[in-house]
Length: 171
Image (cartoon, rainbow, N blue to C red; front, top):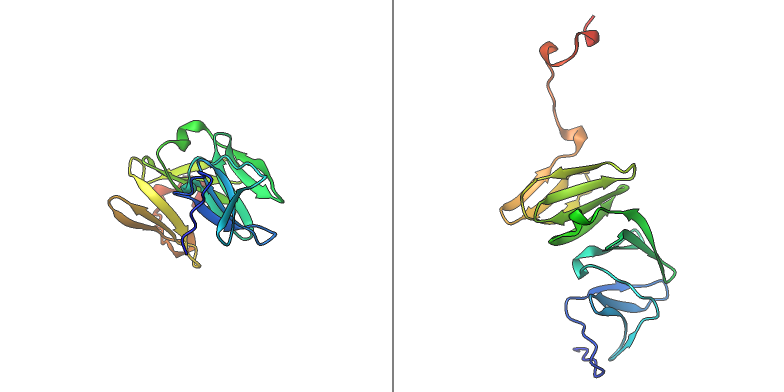
């Protein structure tokens, strides 16, 4: 059944999630709505997200990006969890949160923000739309050029030769 609000509310391009009270929410640039069978009401909690692509529910937490950075929604209240420089918030793809890391995708790559405040951009100057991490710790990127895989660090083989290391390592 298609839900058609008769009160002029716009539900296009919404992110859907279930809250702690088992209510289904639709969040988009226009607002936060609760869907009940065939009715739609404005939710009491204001969620100001940049896009439906910048919301994510994982491990029971609801994350979203706004002009202040990464926010967490808990018990109907939102709080900034990680401030983000506005330059990363342009031409956004999806966000991904995994292992205390936030990934932001945009038309200049995928930037990984770690809990310690460090950041690193992968696939710089490539339009990255989405990032996921699989159960083996590999990170996958979808781009306009295809799909890329960043192997788990434990799966990578690095060969160092004596000329690559400072002399203090070889005694």
